[in-house]
Image 1 (cartoon, each protein chain N blue to C red):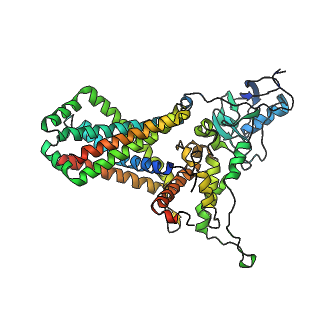
Image 2: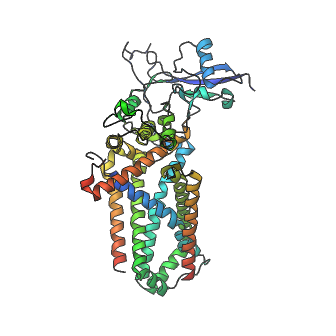
Image 3: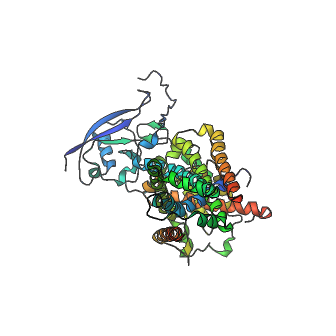
Amino acid sequence: MKGRSIEPFFWSLFSSGGMLAALVLPALALALWVAIPLGWLQAPGHQHLVALIGHPVTRLCLFGLIALASFHWGHRFRFTLYDGLQLKHLFGLIATLCYGGATILTAVAAYVLWTF
Amino acid sequence: MADSVAIEVRRYRPEEKSEPYWQRYEVPVREEWMILDALNYIKDNLDGSLSYRWACRMGVCGSCGMMVGGEPILTCASYLADHLPGPIRIEPLRGFPVVRDLVNNLDDFMDKLTAVKPWIVREQEQPLSEGEYLQTPEELDAYKQYSMCINCMLCYAACPIYELEPAFIGPAAIALAQRYNFDSRDQGAEERMDHLSRDEGIWACTFVGECSVVCPKDVDPAGAIQRYKVKAMTQWYKSMLLPWGERKR
Amino acid sequence: MNPEYRLYHPKWHRRKVPIFWWLRKWSYMKFILRELTSLAVVYAAVLLLLQVVAVSRGEEAYANFLAFLERPRVLAANILIILGLLFHAVTWFNLAPQALVLRLLGRRIPDRVVLLAHYLGWLAVSALIFGGLARL
């Protein structure tokens, strides 16, 4: 085991985040940010949404989605910069920015959903 | 069909010029000719100084891989007529250093190949009296696809990651590691994992997928690498959650 | 003769990789676009979080947020993001059979079946989301 990288951990976040994003996000984004603003779908009332998000299961799901989607981005974007722009020599900086950004986003999501 | 076609070869002759250059040849078109036949025509009739590798002419030796029109192919397995009207541009495989004309240096691939131990590893050989290692058709089926690799290195030439990061172990070597990992007679998966689950191993791969597209034997190295990642991930979690069972075989 | 050449000292030629190497081939281009969908994913995560914040701040903040979503520029940007998300989903599912090799009774489950299962799952989840939101 010695010398093996921590990459499997980040990859597990990347791949579960990617799967979740692929399954959930297109429909969610289409409904919330296109169908509702265009009036194809009635905007849910504020009270209903408060009740929905107030439920612990909803909050847990939202947290999982946001956290994993963030780390999906962090991991994938890190390699996009490495390979797409040939910035591998900046690996320390890039990894810090990508995973750091994902961690901050996860922390903010945890705070917002915890105090909802 | 056209009578002749222009072939432009990327030539490199270090004793004459430090940089590669393009040279154009006109070769006749014959229906049954492969790209390799056109190169042989040049060598035999037009320019004996042209250097390239080939051997079997039937797509099994894996030595005549070149970039034709920017794509890595086996030149013995692609009809000249399919590349008309030309000019047909022929270059050495990408990603490898060029020794001369279309000839690459293969040391890097050979070193990587031996490093993944592409042979059956046993902790202890079974005594002869117990007979041969038997295998069911299902057990054969588990690795057969990966055993079709002919080491032609087209997958390396198609892989942008290998070109960007020459330390990357690369598609064929990882697929061949899997060929033995999935073999019921083999016990070397753990050793190979130590070598392959590194940043320059499976984790450098970003699943561009071109290796599997160009593979002439449908080995699907890209799939082999992703399966390796899944395996490495489950092992990583196991070793984290059950530290005492880390070296369990 | 090349004056830099020394007899019996092989001099290999190494090609430089251009910075924008992915412009060379359409398949590489597609790969880079696929990788860039991660930006759409993180955008969606942030916007979702902002929407939750808006809801938590009360009725007025929520109404403001809905008005913000109706601005033509925001709407256009979101449509672009959704195209990115769709590209992510399609490429993700299409590659899944290569990574996910399942065996049943000693035989490999055909790629088509794995692919179909993913798309059916996608359809089911999408229907659930639309149905759920329409009911609220």
